[in-house]
Image 1 (cartoon, each protein chain N blue to C red):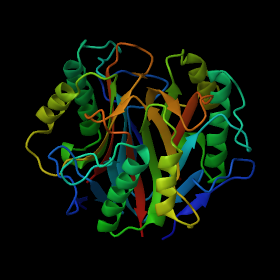
Image 2 (image 1 turned 180 degrees about the vertical axis):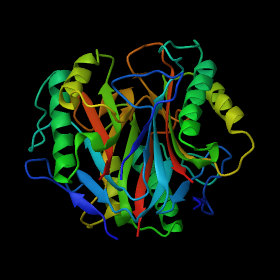
Image 3 (image 1 turned 60 degrees about the horizontal axis):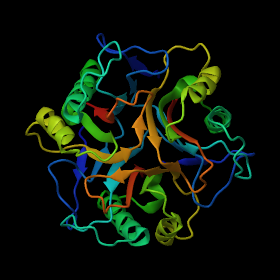
Length: 132
Length: 132
Length: 132
């Protein structure tokens, strides 16, 4: 089974996201809950967005790989950032892990008032993957 | 294959959304990433919510149709609006495209602090469709 | 068919959520739209978060059960709370209904500027379930 990435003519093209992804009927789906930049004890590991995003993505990849999935199996990322700080350091932390692959996931990026209970949390990333 | 729309007795009924939709096991899913009111170069096309929503929906439909889907295949819309402006003009722009069909998608509507990088972006709409 | 809950070693463990859930290929999916603490006429039933959350969860369960699903079939909850009020009363209202089951859904919790049209709405909860 393979997913099909849809990027129609006449629409914005970006190395950061696909406009649409078709998931075949025989795929298993993996839901990954919102990941923060926290360690196994729940402590936030960094004060800045880049550091928290790096850890949140590492957590996300841990769940993905424990499920038998790979980065290219991701079909949706929901990226939620607190407040109006510059989001590019977070984007950089993600792209570093994504690397030079083609066919990125679809994404939704929201700036919100807060995430979870702690005011220190600056980013939360949830995902859906289509397992091969 | 057909989806089943679930609107239980004793719950709010609306022409704007379904309370639940069951997707059969043999459906292909289409994830559509968060669409803004931007053109192919990434420029925001309007200053107002109605204009941005119309373009965001047109972009969403472009991805849907490029995937072989139709409006009635949509099973979830996530509609995210910046700030506390009146959202009815955006709703009007959507209903104009949705038309007189029955069985609307499920929806989630959030008011957020911002969307993506540009402060000019007023609306983002993501979707899931179950392709026939 | 059964879902598989994924909680890797070295990650935060919580009775409130699973880190990941694998949905088998032959599952039917149920999308449940964003539920508020409103009655069948659309009136908000309480001024506080606990009361609104209790009603929103009851609405969510109504859609779930009308679709032939059970609480343990939930694979994702999106929980969106207005402003920076204490979210623990809402969490309590959810846990009361969830009870002592194992294998909770994945969750994403966002604090947002508002929900839908009415400024009185304090919480919205959407869900995905994998029907057996």
